[in-house]
Length: 309
Image 1: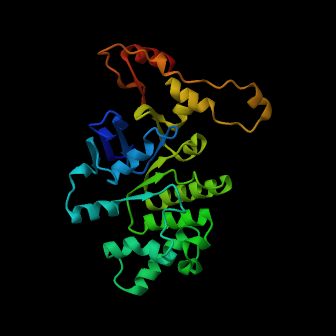
Image 2: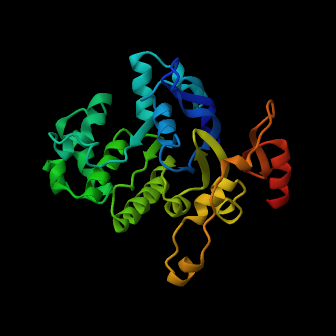
């Protein structure tokens, strides 16, 4: 792997602190993202995966832990200048292409918003040339520049969202379920576009989704979340062919296969958290069961996972 671009250390994001109904959306999570790779983050709705993305980019202030980008603590950046520079290096593609675009702005102005903020164009002509180039990069054309969001399809709107993220030439992009609101045929187009852009521009992605088959297609490594915890982290092929944590096995067993006969016979695995009957004071943490394959477990479970890896 290349150098670490992003390091997450014991990250916590709690809501309703000090109240009886405290929500531990992200509870003591650590992982790294290497330059040029795609790390997929999966789990069912409400597990905290989107909260991680929003905390990394400082849409939320972390309750605890560190987010290091190129070795520097993101959470310690306070001045407007520091935050502006950080926002240029990190960008986000949002889940809903309908809600994430300002309906009163034309596509050209939506895409150029970052260019204007960071002063990346000296003249109006240079600004529009950049917009036209970005439109073509994401598979649209110059004629789309003067249209409003309601004049585009869902897939086209997401392409505009991608163009907006690319406008400031970032190094790292958080894609927060960028395909979940799109038709299946359009999903593949958007994912293929993202892979193409990654190769051309050397981008690094955190790809957040609940569609496990699509995450496998785009990701180099995959992390599995369950109720605010990262329970498994492994190379994509290892996770799919040798899932170790029972929750990961349950998720994978739910992926539909386009074979009616197989689907009729298939037995889905149900995850029961009670299988992890940890004793008081027992140390439960991420442990390496195989090279690069980490599982959240006790020492006793770790020995079993190592034998099965």
